[in-house]
Structure formats: C-alpha cells, structure tokens
Image (cartoon, rainbow, N blue to C red; front, side, top):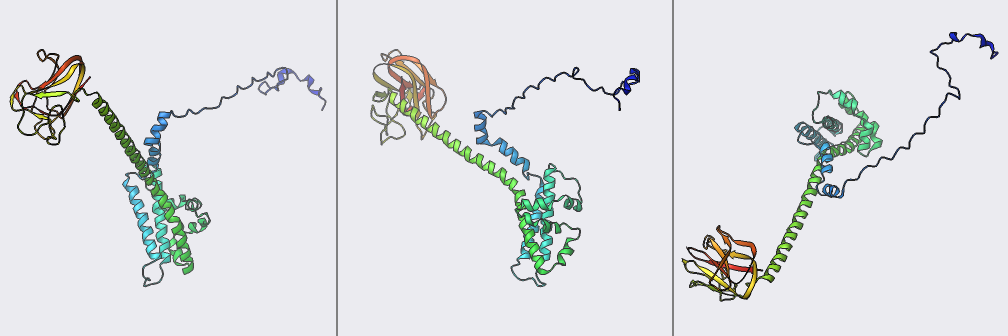
Length: 370
C-alpha cells in the first residue's frame, strides 16, 4: 500500500480512543529505580539469646504447637491407633499358631485401622484440637500414600499402601494369597509404626524441653548455691580476721555452776553451746576488754543453739572507755539465733552486752567488728 494513500483522511475521522504510538520525542526516560537496600534481620541481643538457651521459650512454643496437648479426643484416637497396631502384631506373629490358619489378612485390616486413627488424630491436631464431623471416605481420600511412605522412610511402598485405602479393603485382603497377605501386612506395619511414632514424638519434644529446663535450672541453682556458699565463707573469713573480740578478755556478771569457758576463750570442749552462762539476776551482762581504744561499727552475736532463745531479751550493746560512762549502740528486742548489726562508728575500749531486767544471759559467740 502507498504510504501516502491515507494522507487525505481528515483528522476528525481518527478514533480518539485508540492509543497513539509514542514518538521518540514524546518518550521520556523513566527514572532509574533506586537500588533496594538489603533487608537486615536484627539478631536477638546476647541476653535474649542466653535466656532462650536457658529457658527455651521458642523451642517450647514450637513443640507445644505440634504436641498432642491435653486434648482428650486426640489422645483417645492415638490410643485406638496403638491398640490396633498392637493387636495386629499379635495376629501377625501369634505366640501360638491360630486354630483357623494365619491371620495375615486380618493383620492388614488392623494396620489399616491404625493408620486411619493416626490420620484422624493428625487431622484434629491440624485443626487446632477441634474436629468437625468427617466421613471415613474423606479421611482416606485426603490421605496421600506417597507422602506417608516417604514419612515412614519407605518410599517404594506407596502403591502397596494405596491398596489399603480402597472401599472394601478387608475383602481385598482376604482374597489375596497367603504370601501376598504376609508381604502386605509386613509393609503396612513398616509404615504404621513410624507415622504413629512421629505423631507421639511431638509430645516427646515438649518433655525434652522440660528436661533441658530442669537440668539447666538445677545447674543454675547449684551454681548460685556455690556462689552464695563461697561468698558466705569469704565473708566469714574476712569477718573472723577483723574480729576485735579475738583474744580480748571478758568478764561475766556471774557464773552458772555448770560448764562455760575460761576467758578469753569463746570455744571449749566442755561447753559447746555457750562460752559463758550467768545466774538469774538483775541486769546479767558480759564485758569485753579490747586492751585499748578501738573504732567499733558492728557486732555479731550467736545465741545458745540448744535452748532458751528468749533469755537475755532485750539484749543491749554498749561501749565505754572507762567502765563508767556507757553509750548504747544497738538493741535486740526479739528472739534470735544469729544477730548481725551495724551502727555508726564509735570509739571505746570496753564493750558490754546485757539484759536490763531480771534475766539469764548465755551466748555461744560474740564478734566485735571495726
């Protein structure tokens, strides 16, 4: 056609709705797309990773999402599957020969039942634990012999497994030869047990997470106990080394006839529960002589462990430089076994512990701390 043939066509006759081909002059260069920045997934912080390793929250959530959980319907379906598999095993390999011949065909049908209950339990779990009414044919229709065979590690058995999903399998099983029945029953068993184990292994995952938690909690508790013990021992060693009462002579206001140590000792074989014991009297007391003026900021008092924690209460601690003027620095008004008290530093040569009433005073240990 002559390209000029249409030159006489009036412009108005051109359909305005038709797209007009762009000319080089009308085409604008599209702006270059900005490079897409790679998506960076933030890693969990170190404390979060440590917490996950220790507690396994994500592992527990994942395991629980696949577990049988407390759903009684699912547990019942698994029980039926296990029972059918157990009876099938007894029929397939009876302890004594059956009266009416081998039961291999019956074992095939029992293994088929076990597979059915397993598939139904899995279906219910996948639906969040609630199962809508379903027909048996629907369960078999949705079952995939190829996937089941792969799951059981027997991909070559897919066709044989499919034979068990027919509408009247027990009739089909019965009409097989004895050799075919045995072969098929053995194959169905090799599939049934693994897929049932996989279903129950979800529960085992939860138990494993709990076990890891228990072990790690126990290890942490042991570590904390060791740290606390080490700290206590270290603190006790430091405190013992700083004790101003070590070697300081002491005098009690009176002496009970039985037991007691001799100053300056606070431990002696003949008196394991107390190193001094007063008679019952007004203001029973014991006074320590530190030999020189010392700075004092605390005391530790260990009460008699075998008897009478209420004696010597209230217990008052006072400090003096001349045995005449005393300054109270601490007071205990309740029973105690081991009393550690700090107070603002004071100076003094003498430290007195006394009960300002009619009482009896006996203590196992006194430490005076700078």
